[in-house]
Length: 158
Image (cartoon, rainbow, N blue to C red; front, side, top):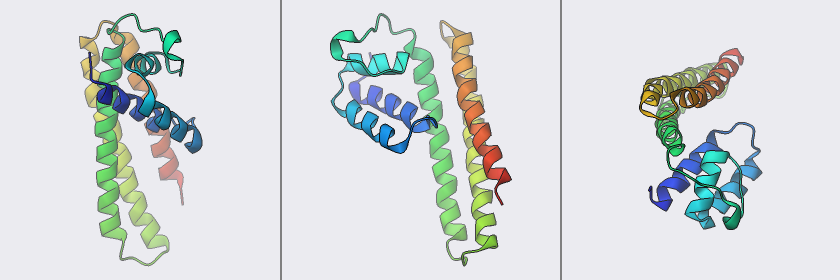
């Protein structure tokens, strides 16, 4: 079994990457994770819902393996994105606000999201090690699709 801190990190990563949640709801979930039991965290990771301790249904660890792989890949992708954003701040920080600075920032954002997508695709190969590789690949494809939508949105910005 994973330590509680690792479960909290996986759940937090899932919330952070969810584009459908409003920022205030993400913050509520993060606060919930701080006091949640291991059973509640496992339930959230496997089922995507918050429940009371007694209602948490966690029958086996096998469904967690794809989530752990995806969590690690998403964290790696986020680190790549943050690294590119940090590089953007250094490269574009001295420019005056305007088209040139916006173009500079856009270039680094594209590199960051592209890196995220690459990390997810690279890690998707580990799905073959799980008990349900099709479900694992489907979960990965959901993350990849969201990242590709984000990339298209950035590319279409003026």
